[in-house]
Amino acid sequence: MEEISRSIKDMALKAGFHLVGITSTRQPDKIKFLDEWLAAGYYGSMKWMHQHLALRRDVRLLFPGAKSIICVGHNYYVQEEQETDKKEARISHYARGKDYHRVMKKKLKSLLSEIKKVYPGMEGRICVDTAPVMEKIWAEAAGLGWQGKHTILISREIGSWFFLGEIIVNVELAGDQPLHDQCGECEACLTACPTRAIVTPYILDASRCISYLTIEYQPDLLPSELARKMDNWIFGCDICQQVCPWNKFKKSTDEKEYLPFIQSGDSTFTRLLNLNESQFKQTFRSSPILRTGYKNFIRNVQNANENKKIYPGGKISRQ
Image (cartoon, rainbow, N blue to C red; front, side, top):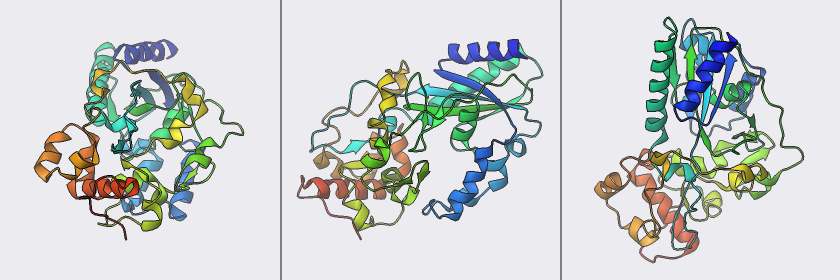
């Protein structure tokens, strides 16, 4: 099976993915940490994390007959940084281009089709973020990288700026060896997080994370204690990745779909706060930002505007 595994990896790289590894569907030891994380209440209001727990623990229930998981990484880093002018709201790096779900699914479908053409009888299921799959744990088992103290997967080759995807297949392939944790004594991410969402190394309290607060948190008003620490972030947050020493190995992506469609000057508080719902949907129609919804998007922009005290027409949204 080693020859088939090497062939599949070559196909994945030719399909445009930047990292690829293979692991068996046997449960990694780290799966047990899901129960501990849920028991601690770190999921915030994401009650859906309690759903389909059996599937999250065992992908063989998700795709009967599953023997192996082909894990891929897709670099989304773009060298040109977003303006940090205080008049501009900040958007997480991954959300400045086209929605990665669309990009990744298209590539994975094409890759699976090619695999089935070369190896008749091999069947599979693709997953990108939305399926109940513990992506980082499986990717770590497949040797793509290790989960850093901020809980994000880190690659020695390209840092942490990459998306994950999987193809679960019904053939037992030659697996890769997982990498050892290489964070060492570094705690830069813990120190830099303004809301102290990383409660201890490798443990994230999602309810305090700026990404959670700007995307998943649904109430009309943001928690005042945390809202004041969110600076000018309006969708997601990159702070823990920006300070990670391993990201000195970051490389600009060759994926054109991830190039920013939001240019400097497009994300001023004045412009964003004056978007109506129709303009919001049109502006972000191909972006992950659409997911947060107009009401919460404006809430986030108002909060960021208050933190920077830029545009007097913005109303504050804190409880």
